[in-house]
Image (cartoon, rainbow, N blue to C red; front, side):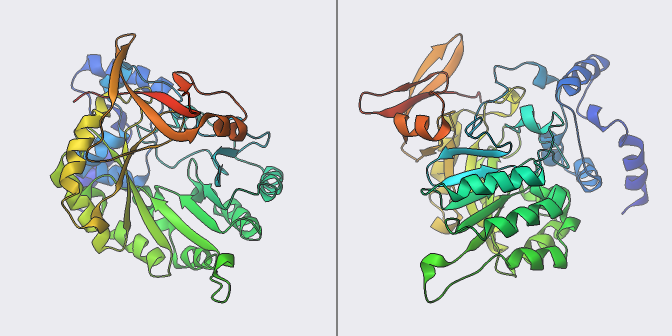
Length: 382
C-alpha cells in the first residue's frame, strides 16, 4: 500500500464516522445518528472506503439519516412465529435461522438495524437443537436460509447448525446469507471452503433426495469486486458452491443502468449468479438512499435488453412479502400522512400468512375479497 495512504488511514480510522460531514454542525448531527445506529467497519473496508465513494456511502453515516419517514422494522420477516429464539418463518416452503445477530460491518441501509445494531445475543446451542426439532415437524418446509447478522462471525456455531440441518429428512436446500466476502474476504480460507463444499450431497439415483448448499452474496457496485474479494468468491465457486448475488438499488451509488449493467456483467464473468435487485427498504435513516420504484423500473427496462442470464429479479418488499416487478408493472399510489405509498396486491394468501406467522396482517395491509393480501409500501424519492 502507498505510504501516504497508510498515513491517511491511520489518521482517519479513529474518526471515520465524520468523513462524509462538511461542517461542525453536520458532525454534531452525525454524532446523534451514531448514538442511535452505531458505525462498525472492518480493517479491509476502511482501506476501500478511503478509495471509493461508492463504498463509503454504504457504510458511513450522513446528516441525512436524521431525517426519515422510515420505520425500525420495514420488513417483519417471521418475527415471533416461533417460541424458539432465532427461528422465523413467513413463507410456506422455507424457514429463516439467525445463529448470530451481529455483523463485522454495518450497512447504513440495513433493514435489520433494530436487531443487528443492538447487541442482541446469538442463539445458544440448545436453541439451535430446539429450532431443528421444530423444523423437522414442518412438512411443507424444504429449505432453510441461514442469515444474520452474519453467520460466518461464528463459524463453529454455523457448522454445528449445518451438520444438523443436513441430517433432516425434509431439508434439501440450504442457503447462507453473508456480506463477509466484501468486508472480510480473508475469512474464506481453503479449509472453510472445503468444509462448506461437503454439504453439497447429490443423489444421482434418487435426485429428490439430493442436498444442496448455496451462498447468497451481496455486492452493490463494481468497485466492490476487488482482487481479494473475487479470489475468495472463486474459492467457493470452484468447489461447486453456487453464489447468488443480491444487489440493493441505492440512490447516488448504483441508480443508473450503466453501473448496474457493469456490475452484473462482472459478476457473471466471475461465476456469480445475478439474482436479485432489491429496492432499498424504507428502514429508518435510509430515505436519502431510496429511489422511487419507478426509477428502478426504468433501470430494469434497460437491463431487460441484455442477455437474460445477466438480468436479476427486481423486487420490493412490503411487510407481507416480496413483490416481483416487471418492465411493464404499474401501481396505484396514495398519500398517507404526507407520505407517498404504493398500493399493491401480493401473491400471498391472507389466511396462509396468518397460519404460518401466527399473527394478523401487518399494518397498512388488508385482505382482498378473494383472500389475498393487499399491501402498502413507502416509495422513495429521486
